Length: 493
Image (cartoon, rainbow, N blue to C red):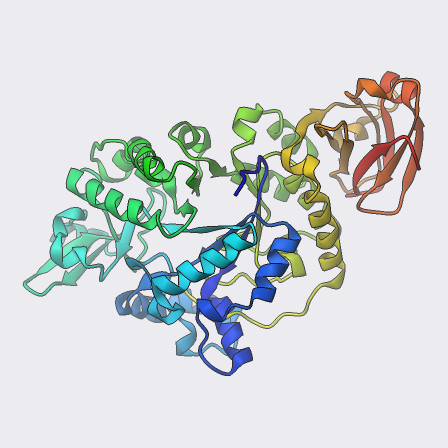
């Protein structure tokens, strides 16, 4: 399958998806029961990657913690007012074994699904959790030295970060997996990266997993960077990612690594070999609803931006429809997904779902479809399927005041796209709650001495402009709050 410069990824909560399918079929569904028609639709919508969340084997220990944790249960009950015990499967990130859960059909069912995706031109992405394992992973019995251990004093002073685990031959105190700013995850145990044998064993797991998919989304990938690991645990370690990525790529040269990463470590992980890194900064700035920081974020070089995964929601964030009003949502989506990088969508986003579903749950609530938002995303995905937005050249455009003291031009964000066959597009967004005016400077020298028509692919407007005026003054815009347009330029109406 050809590699696309700016691909689109669709994240699916596998367990919730199969629960819904089971209810339709009246029996337990595995990956084999996923209809070809649903895969056909994903391919038709233009997705290059399907990320199946939570396919790996989890255990009873993690499920017990999930069911008994009062804070988590309150969250689950907010999501599912009719919550039942069987709805709480345990976190998909408290992994006991990197083999597909038998309830999903096992490794063989995944292999068959991967082939069905491949036949439709789509690639498969799965999870990899480098920082920790489940409480009942086999290494707890076989290789306790692979984990950070604690003392009775640690357990007494920080019970949120340590746990006593009963093994077959003894009891030991282990540290929960955590980041340096929050309490530990109580259904996990922290891996000890200072142990070179542990790193080698984890690398073996990683290379085996690479034979089952085309890419991995690496959970909290920055936690195992040497400086962060030492900050958290006080232990010096050897870098893991450069060796791991190089080793996998010897086996599968085009294997894709996507990093969940925060704390401005995106560039660091890109330099260590990651194809894509989360762009949480853009998301946060869009939530703040101020245009200038969003525009300034897009000043970065393409060697950086091309490797950013742009999103409006994922399983860790609130639903976009719950965060943004309908008009702001559409403006934010245009800025997010018509910027360079990986376009990252989540199941339910396209129909306007409001309730985030915890990775601990295997059932989601029934929610109505937002028809207006669904129509918008149909239009946006149609735009994104155009070759120019998948392979073309992007650049941020300057917006200047329409007249002296016209401050509202600072609310406009615009970019240009150009294809190899000369196609030209201008994306323009008024990212503010006020009417805004300004001129957008266009870089297309071919505009000279011709009349141009600008058709908005997200609306019904058609502008007619003289090419010489577009080059000398720019494209004049006078647009209402939060309006987003994608103009296709042509010499015929």
